[in-house]
Image 1 (cartoon, helix red, strand yellow):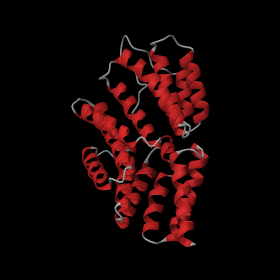
Image 2 (tube, helix red, strand yellow):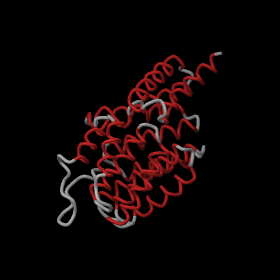
Image 3 (tube, helix red, strand yellow):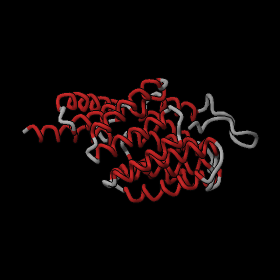
Image 4 (cartoon, one colour):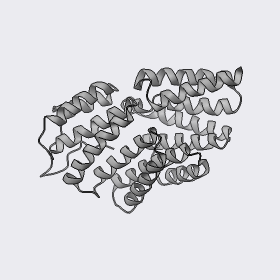
Length: 276
């Protein structure tokens, strides 16, 4: 969802060449620590309630989350949410998107019920709205809900939400990719590993079809979903190969604290325990 497009008279111009645009370019390149530092510097240099500063805080929060620094990301989202609400209004899709992004960091902190409640609210609000931004936001919030439900072991509910979201979001884009990965996680949680493997392979096709610039946030996710399914099918050698690849990709891309890096490491530990 592009939050940096031109928004019309009376709002900030496109941010090309500004410190905010530079921070976004660093984020898009996967240089998350640099992006966070540049975005925070840009935010602190702007007047209070300035749209550039608000966007910079959003980038800083995204970049912190991408490094697995979820508590730091939530704190920055909290700061940004106050500014977004004043500038855009509580019901604006940009403010709602910020809430959805923040909620998904809550579940990375183990605050799954809070994430569930917030994503449910945002998804319902977006579903009542109009326009492509609201439709995409509804799908994004449902994706967060799927993750929160899976994290609570409520895999059948997660499957239902994921399938409903995929039925509503028919574009073959990154949103479809993450929803299919959520569905694979729900199926693995129900020990329906063959179906999960099929979803993971479908997600891999979507991933490979994405532009290179859009792939970085999902590094290692397909490998991890496939590894979980293969391990459930007792195809341990294949599962170990993919889990190792996932861990290497995630650690190099996001750092060892990112939830996906941790999940890959824990999967490898379970494989070691099963083989002993």
